[in-house]
Image (cartoon, rainbow, N blue to C red):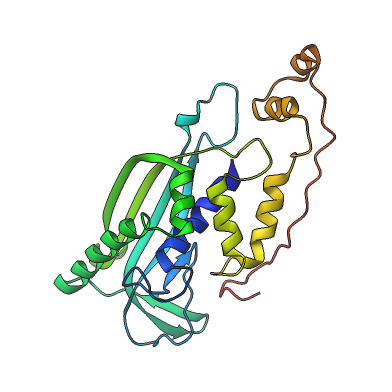
Length: 251
């Protein structure tokens, strides 16, 4: 379900940014973002930079159900790549994207090539990525255009539909994801969230195997009773800390 999708997005961002460490595998350097663009300390506010934002937009057939097959679960990973400049504004900053030209378009093409090469490197993030997907179902790359006049801007959007594994039944991620998350505790930008994700993977691990399968296969209670499957207690989950952000991104 959701947990493998989260691990997949973290693995992609970590692979593209080398855990926010040097050397960077792409010309975007550390300007690789998870779901939101933010100015990076030390980057000039009037100079254009290549950057990339990663989203997991769609998850088709993610929740477990009796009629779903494993190979029917697809997750859409969206890469929004652009070359832009951060400008100060009343709300904090504004991202400005210039109209494209030969040099900018070439840079975007090179960044797109580097993105896919980076995902197939030899890091634990790449290994986790490969372990979570069974292959590419569909890949589309689109040029960016402004909403106002349809001008071609220095931006591309790549949507990648991957065949993604469902969450495991055994209360822990697969070995490759577990190794990646262990490394992520001390590298990159997700360290504060790793333990919460691992705790979510463990949810229900103390239940009998038959009960775990009954939950994931959505067996009705009467079927569980006929099969003699133990009923689980009412689920109780740890409430994560929720941080509300203003429009400018500040808490």
